[in-house]
Image 1 (tube, rainbow, N blue to C red):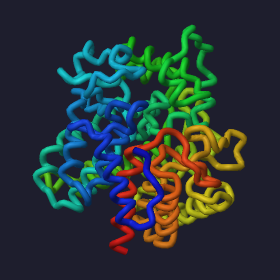
Image 2 (tube, rainbow, N blue to C red; image 1 turned 90 degrees about the vertical axis):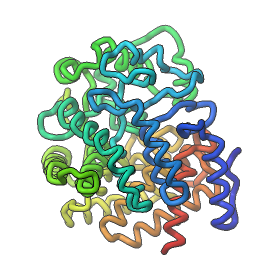
Image 3 (cartoon, one colour; image 1 turned 120 degrees about the vertical axis):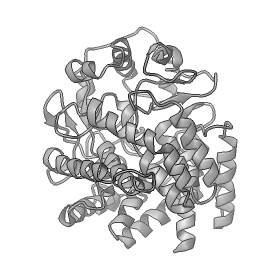
Image 4 (cartoon, rainbow, N blue to C red; image 1 turned 90 degrees about the horizontal axis):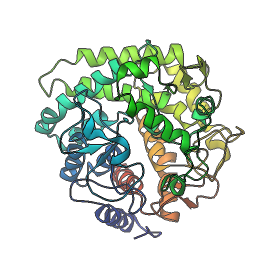
Length: 425
């Protein structure tokens, strides 16, 4: 069903729960029926956070089913294939079953995703007080963080690198344009069925080529460090990782562990973000060219999730966020690319549209820093988007019209959380 405009909060909550029930497979929530028929890591983390106050047991099942796909290396894959539904690129492309480190009996992709999982567990623990769940999943979270700190520190400065646009959670962002343009011209001679429908205008031949190169190298960390042609330090990915390190430091004593290593990792990430990605705003760094990316996207605000980000940097980032480059010139927050950039396109995924996911993350960042007015604006405007257009994948930042697929799960789940906060306020 498509979310319909709702007059009151109770009606909107019922709409959201109906979407989530329709998208539930019994073990996980698919992002949307038809186009996205499997479990996506980033989506499931956000969905679990949205469900934490309303359906905490369902949220726990969501995270546990995702962690069933974790590799022995600690890598949490960006897709777990729980059903035989057709999808491209599916299990036949990734061939996880051929890898000794992949889980047995569960098919997955070979890429990872923004490591929001520890923050999601902390969010559940905060609202449910379930120490047993924390103890159950803590080893998996710790292994994930070890993987990022070792296999993904390709620049040697403490930040994790993404090795494919799909790992960013912001697939078609203009932040990746330069790195993709530096790759060889690739033509497979056939339409990448499914990809073209989901993301028209994207360079899917290069996307697929990167995935196949990594697969054919056995998903080895050494290959990523020495040969893989796409490697970027992304401020959103690393800002999320830092926030998850802070969460792990708080969860560690609950699980009988030591908080110090996670607090120290957060400090290393904070220092590296400032040293390598900050120049008045946070920009991604292309490790292969050695240059930072010029365009400023919504990813620039990821480090705001750090509760210890210096006060002057918080002020600078909020000024940029509220300026005519982003929120100040649109009817709805937050455009996914600065609107003055030549790459801005209000119609194309992650090149202009607003997303409930990033709005929610920035609202969380505003709360972390005590920015109550900004938090309220993000809450009110995001709820206005879904009231007006339904639980769409993304939205036009100027007129609020819905874009992408309908009945999108993270839009519905995070709406539940925003409604819960508006009631508590």
